[in-house]
Image (cartoon, rainbow, N blue to C red; front, top):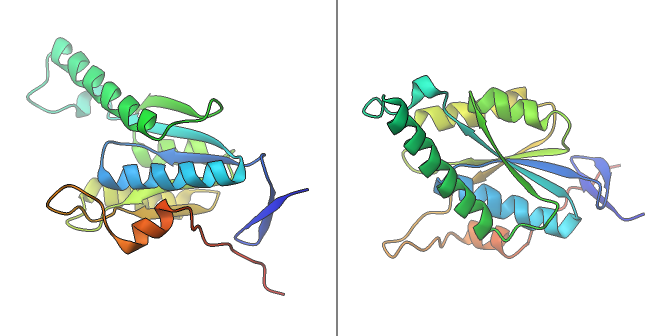
Length: 177
């Protein structure tokens, strides 16, 4: 059997499942890129989870039901485009939920082998930092927190760390003995 090591646990290749939190942010896109490369390398199934705010958390200027529906439809289209840009394999899935991102991601990861989320490097959004902290502390599975790649004036992501992840150079964890 072909096995990978993840935090000292052998995982049979092709049977691993990964949950990745997905928004349209640069950090989330980096997390999806990392999770997609890891899933392709290990043959893992990937579940991308986008947690939309509950209806009462929609922007205040969009309080009418029609405006709220339009905001949600636009958000869904954006997330679906982000997911499609990762060139998903047929066994990968994107789901949309309404609720609280941290608890909902942890709940979806309870039967997975790995949870992947993004982390913002500069001027972190307080709510997103709370989601990362919540997931890191509450998830029953290993959590990979992928930093957002810095964006240059031309819009390119050029961090050497991101380039290493983007090239597929994912570090192996070996059991010490």
